[in-house]
Image (tube, rainbow, N blue to C red; front, side):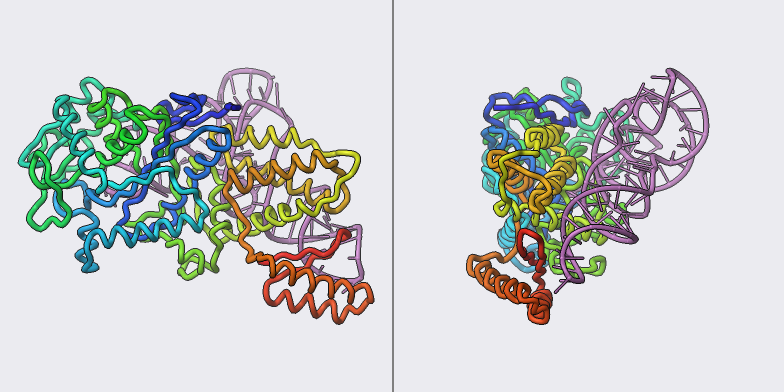
Length: 486
RNA sequence: GGUCGGAUGGCCGAGUGGCUAGGCUGAGCUCUGCAAAAGCUCCUACAGCGGUUCGAAUCCGCUUCCGACCUCCA
């Protein structure tokens, strides 16, 4: 197995050679969605980014166990460690069972990710399915002396923890600054330290989702689920932990603290954080109300959208930016991506139609090594795409008869391009190209070619114009006529 | 206020101490019955001001502006 992969690690703020703990196995945990509302496009970007990472690791030959959780309990509104969680709140609003909320948005989440052609994770555990694991973990943290119980709620003791461990490894902040800058919040009387956070929260009478525990009826804190589930399925120490950048400062910081306090070992070797999708320079977020629902994007039914964009065009748009850069949304940028995507896919559709020659003028090896070099450099999909457009130029040139390629190199080129576009970037052609439809088009094109050969341009142009009106473009070339559907 | 990250050509976006991505757009050309597509060519940028250097957009400093996190959010 070849491995020249370099990954940017948030812990060191540097790119590091990727050395798995137990090659060829790789354990990767990614924080999934909290399923109390529709996923928006910004959420999708993170999961598309990790899909790319998952796909490339697999392509390199690693046996990846990709765990992505579903948060379906214990995620409170605000940081007050009290009151109802997001699900209960929404459930009351919609007059549904909390688990109906969870089901509804979990299904929606899966539907959307399927449209974006993301591969399902190896394991997709839920918080409510791992209550006992979370309770066990809290018990262990208490036993190790890093948590304390007050009136049925268990808090993590950040001050004690930070005497032995670095609580701010991920954020590089000074603990004193954090203490001084944390806002005065209500409901903190029970806590010993203002940075302490809840591992387990006492239920009130009206709390809908609650479970028995050694500390009475309650529910888990938000952070503990990821620690419990990652260690259950990937071990106390695993290779990659990922999530959106917005999770680093709080959620991931607390995850590391919990895991170290429980297992005396840092959970993940590499921490990867994907950057935000922005709209007019500001982060797309649920609370800011500037988010697009994927369905709005696909249909164009949103005030900020000029038209609809297909899921694959959007995926391509996302992959044209590096995962650690912010990506700014705009109609112009999306339209440019859409056109570029079509050009790429059109070139791919020419591959089976290319003619071979006895001589070869195409250096596929160099192209291949450039593609791998791009992805090996911290999954640099924009550079990879730039290299693939070089392949597009070559393919078009061969099709036009201006460049010659022999059979072996054509085979190599086809495999290379198809692997990178379909398997690694996860793009797919989205035409309704059924067998029958293709055959039908062959007949139509043959009729038009006959008319053209007879210089009956009235007929040939009326065929072309008719097809144009239903979104099918005919393109004549020396090698024959090809068609594309927009 | 603290911490961190940005500022790249008409737009989007990579990258990097010298060889100066890519996509989209615009102009011209080739091909073509005409289109379309494709190919070729052109428009060559790195916020500002200093410094280091033979050489900086890339390193350092300052300034301006923007964003993220520090409150739930991928």
